Amino acid sequence: MSSSVFPFSALVAQAPLQQALLLAAVDPSIGGVLVSGPRGTAKSTAARALAELLPEGRLVTLPLGASEEQLIGTLDIQSALRDSAVRFSPGLLAKAHLGVLYVDEVNLLPNPLVDQLLDVAASGVNIIERDGISHQHDARFVLIGTMNPEEGDLRPQLLDRFGLAVEMSNHFDASVRQRIVKARLEFDMDAEAFRERHADEQASLVERIHAARASLSTFDFDDAVHARVSDLCIEAHVDGLRADIVMLRAARALAALEGASSVSVTHVERVADAVLKHRRREAQAGSESPQNTADPTPGDTNKGDGDWGYMPPEPAGTAHVKSVRPLAAKKA
Image (cartoon, rainbow, N blue to C red; front, side, top):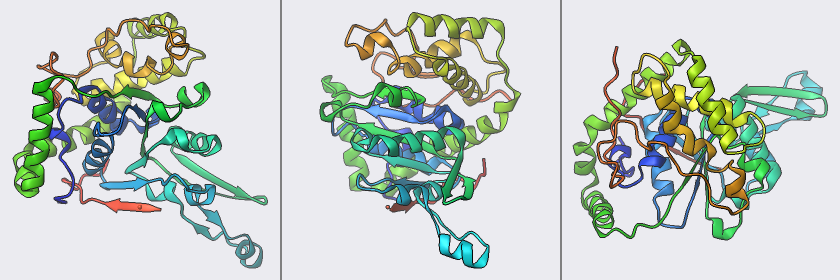
């Protein structure tokens, strides 16, 4: 257990972000989470906290100045020609396997690099090709990209390829600010004691993610679910069908996380905002976007204040590499 990581279950006032991160953790093929907002809104804290819940407990950070070779890895061509064997030096994508790949200020990265990141995040496979020589390896990770819109935006084509998006904002409710500050001060004063108080909730989240991943293949989508997804995407005037597919995957992940017996229209509506927020044509054009009807937090009993005291209902049945020992030695 690392005393330097703030517990995921103890985060305050970030319910929509928590839901999005957990859904991506259950099904990384959703395509990652884009978190936009000003500095000081706990974006990196949430990424580190999520990594601790995953099987490898690994957080890999992509630095702004990273090259393509640092990201995808390198092939020793001379060795391949001389020895007829491919010698591969892993990049950050390989190191992030089964963990979290965190990209701060993703909007400042070169577009081709972002494109490669999103390709691998969606497919779970990294392919390196050089001079007719090819190598591939598994790279299944939760991609978390953060950005401050004041420093520039991503092209719409890249925005669309992030599975989910969450907009963070400053808190101007005095009671919420006080809860956030009190939790942080308690952690800073005695991190081990603070983490111990949240150990049960953390362990429960680990188990639920593990169980949800294992049950994903048992879910199907009925006609009512497909119809609701289509209606929501048409209302948002999204381009293409990526939003429909991501919404179905996110709804399935939410159903699995809650131990539901099937995917329902309610699950669809509760993930819709994160799927459509960055894809609505009105939002990209600067117009007022449709009202969000999605319930941001599964099982939330404090919807009015957006508290991070989130626990899903009980189931029915640096290159910078930072390793954090997972709370439970479970393999997804």
